[in-house]
Length: 202
Image (cartoon, rainbow, N blue to C red):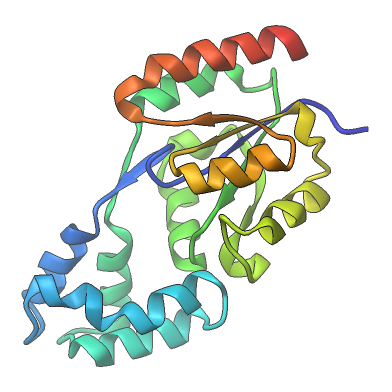
């Protein structure tokens, strides 16, 4: 039987990210200025996150597109070192470990997912998840939410879903999830809504 579950997005919820960090570091070893790098990867980023190309293909083609003077392994490290942990969220979630199951739902590549789960303690209470690169579809489309319901055995009515993007929240709400549109500047709002939900389901 499905049980109450906390389901969370990753980017700008559990961790913050800043692609300009990678752009500045890559630009030091590329003929292209930092502000031009994102556009030169536009044709790769979507297919990479949706699993249409694998890590090796992305790294090879990104290094070529940016004319990066370094190895693919060096580029991968730079590409991944853009995240910082949301300390307020970690403080909120750590006491819930063992009280409520926690799962992940994220638009992300395998490269970033593996880095995040290995590097940041905030992910320790989480057990399993669905990711766009392996699901072959992404938010805000319904398909990835339906895969998540099936693969994680969720009852949307008993699932508290956190995301920072309104279109994703709208899809989840339409499918019956209890939702919270997260803004780190109003972290206290999350704590109040989460505690209210916990008091109902536990």
